[in-house]
Length: 108
Image (tube, rainbow, N blue to C red; front, side, top):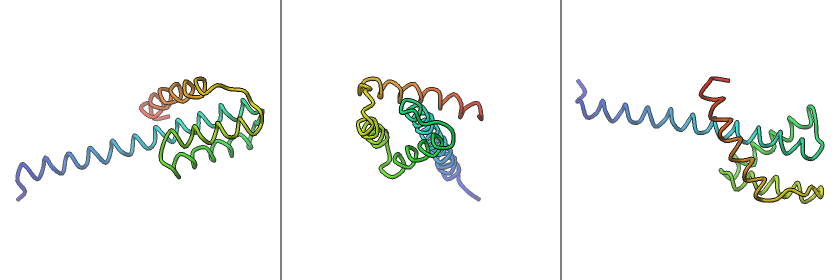
C-alpha cells in the first residue's frame, strides 16, 4: 500500500511530465508558424516553405530555444538581404507563441 506522500509525489511527477509535453508542443508549433512566416517574407512558398519551417523547428530543437530560432531566421534574412528588424522578428516570435498556445490547447 502506498502512502499519501508517495501518491502525491507520483501525481506531481505525472503533472510535470504533461506540462513538459505541452511546453514542447507549444514551442514546436511556434517555431513552425514562425518558420512559415519567415519563408513567406523570403518569397518561399508551398512545399519549400514547409521544408523551411521544419528547418526552423530543428534549429530550435538542436540548441533548445528561442535564441536559436531567432539566430537562424536572422541569418537567413541577412543572407537574402531581407530587411527585417530584430524587434519585428522578436515580436513575431511572441505573437506566434500566443497563437501556438491557443492552437495546442484547442487540440489543433
